Length: 261
Ligand SMILES: [Zn+2]
View 1 (cartoon, rainbow, N blue to C red):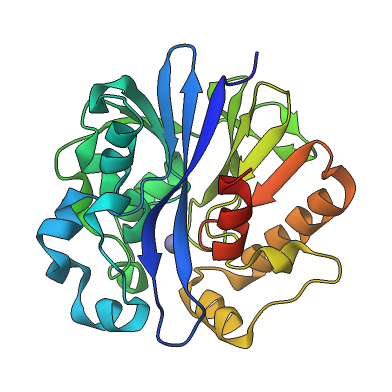
View 2 (view 1 turned 30 degrees about the horizontal axis):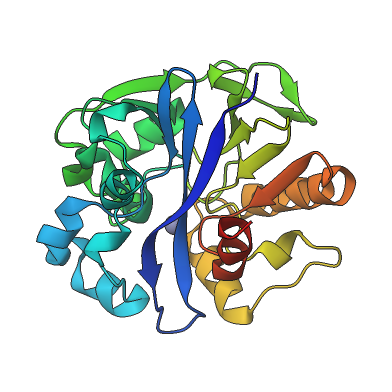
């Protein structure tokens, strides 16, 4: 059975200096056993201490840091308690995806094992992207590594159940993964995280603003893997859009279209 209801949340707004405005697209999924968050945006830690994000980062991406945008505030506004969130699945642990972990300390946090390894043992170039304070409270990590059933041609790593699976999409980070959620109508939503920054990169023919291409190239740990996965996702969209809706974390227009459906 698919998930009962899926809410689209924006858990961080950005006005980058060199790119169009962006969001941090998060899913709140009502499942039989409890609530699931897919990614978390920023949380109370960044609101209390924006400086921990670092001055260069604050100047480059200019996050709004609006208290009403945290996952915690939006979960409460929907009438739920923080403890109702039993599970969180993260696409990766960059600071704009992992900030909300601290606000749901009871939740199990599902993660692709290579991503937790990268965050715990960052290489020189990775040190600035991860913020260990975001998981200093000691989340209940649930690490996933064994390939599961094939999912539309992608080797999946089963995350939580047959309605939520983790799809490795390496490149942006060492353990980056998409999270696919099956809804009540048996349609899949694939949160592709930062595999792409602009939904039009998955159109045929693809397109992307030059500034976003530069940002993605600079931020990737492997541009070869990132480009290969972009092409696989583009093919998925071209051939299976009736069964799967693919979206990325930061595309504001894509978020607007899905949130108001
Ligand atoms: Zn991001």
